[in-house]
Each structure stands twice: as structure tokens, then as C-alpha cells.
Amino acid sequence: MPIQKDPEGIETLHLHKHADITSQRVLEVGCGDGRLTWRYAGIVARAIGIDPDMDALCNALRCCPSSLREIISFVRADSLHLPFSKESFDRTILAWSL
Image (cartoon, rainbow, N blue to C red; front, side, top):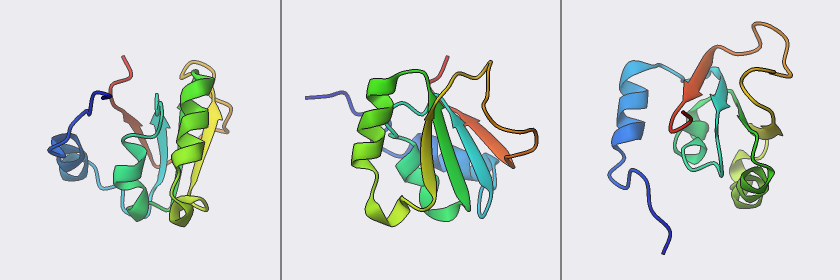
């Protein structure tokens, strides 16, 4: 059985408490398999998750709910070499990335 991170939703609670991401363009650094992405994606304008792990990104794409496919994208990249223009995002999220 895989380890379930944050089953109580504390991480999500603190995210919403400390950062208003409603209708924002969000960059999630180190998105992995999308574990956190699904917890906030329903309220943002756009979410792009980046991760250097292609297997994790493929899993994220496979598990992406169809209702969120227009909002979420996953890109293989690292935080030192972002393939986006400046000011493309309103917020950036890093969780379990370091």
C-alpha cells in the first residue's frame, strides 16, 4: 500500500489559509504525480505543474480528472530553468519539493 501524504488535509488547509489562489495562474514546482494539484485545481484559473521526473508526470497525466484537463498542464522542467516567460504566474507553490 503506498504512503498517503496528508490524509487529514492539513497541507491543503494551510495552503488556502495563507495564499488566496482563487482564479489565479499557479505554478507548482515539484508537482510529482499531482497529489497536491488535485486538491486545489478546482478553484484556480490555470495550473502548471513542473517536475524533472518524467514517470511521475506521466502518472499525473494519467490520473488527471477529465473535468480538470482544460485547467492543468504538466511540464518536465526544473526550478532553475523554467520554460516560461516572466510574469506568467500569479502564485507559485512548493510542497515536498526540497
